[in-house]
Image (cartoon, rainbow, N blue to C red; front, side, top):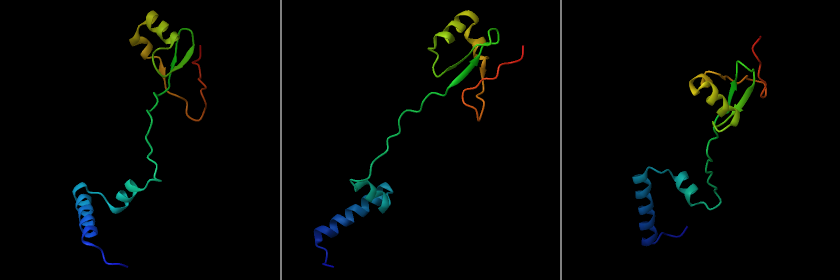
Length: 103
């Protein structure tokens, strides 16, 4: 292995100084410098799906945002505070099946 030149030693010293200053490990530094490493940028987290059951009509809806036309009609008719109480918990293990209360 050839001896390091003065410039190489200065470069290595500067890299070690920066690693200590920014608290970066050798593997983190190599990952930053590796062109083949892809950075995963997480996308926005989706809004949770909410299920509402109208106790008067037994109609159910699933919404992510409150722009649903049926939801808006319910809010206009019954009020937002009342409609908010109609939210039900999703049934685990079943896909989008809603059990209706007994009449």
